[in-house]
Image (cartoon, rainbow, N blue to C red; front, side):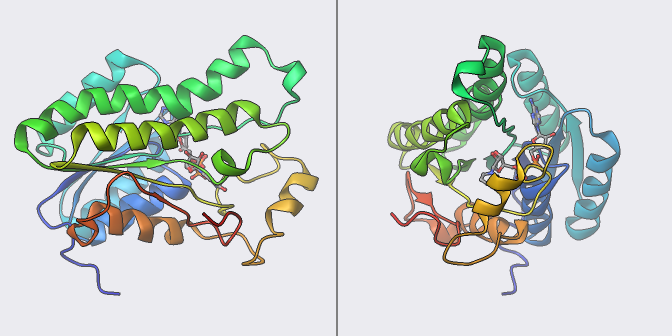
Length: 252
Ligand SMILES: NC(=O)c1ccc[n+]([C@@H]2O[C@H](COP(=O)([O-])OP(=O)(O)OC[C@H]3O[C@@H](n4cnc5c(N)ncnc54)[C@H](O)[C@@H]3O)[C@@H](O)[C@H]2O)c1
């Protein structure tokens, strides 16, 4: 599909965009004409590569470091983006971490590390971005959840809780800010990114990831296509939806 121009003139912020799904979304948005802000945490080199590729595609892009768990860093990031790229029209809350650990071995810090990154960050970034969208009377917010928020998985309790929380957060926010601002989510199935690796998952869990109707893991571009749709005016009647780009792992 020729997507050039779908996001022409828009400014988009994608959190955690130096790698994986966020990187693919940043590139897809830039190819659709958006000025893209590439948020990252301690990934200057990778973020700069993504920024340069985005700037080549759309003419304007920014890499901006901020830890999305911290309100002050988030507000400074949003202020900097709006000063340099213009008001944010599209926000993708994508940054996330995962952790495989038995429930009874979890510390409070383990819980906070996952829930603060995967859920609280969305509260903080939305709180910084939504006032501007509301004042301008338009905007699109896309939150990256996970199929595991539907399914649950042993050894992943904080992640599943956070991702189910993302879906509830999305629906409530969608009702509060409609009709001017559309808030939706994507709940990906297994996708080939650094998150889906032996660093984060045991071989048994990785094997189980492939046992889905699609019989394969997904590609980041397959999630970016859903994000581009939700960001664009083509999704003008989508409010509070959770798109299941998941290879059939969960069928709503
Ligand atoms: N890969 C999968 O199978 C899969 C499946 C379902 C959902 N997801 C979700 O997709 C999103 C992207 O994950 P991915 O698979 O591309 O993995 P990834 O590890 O490549 O991407 C996550 C990004 O978030 C960044 N990040 C982490 N903590 C941050 C923080 N505090 N502040 C700013 N950035 C931070 C990381 O540096 C990384 O670049 C995540 O929310 C993840 O939960 C992934």
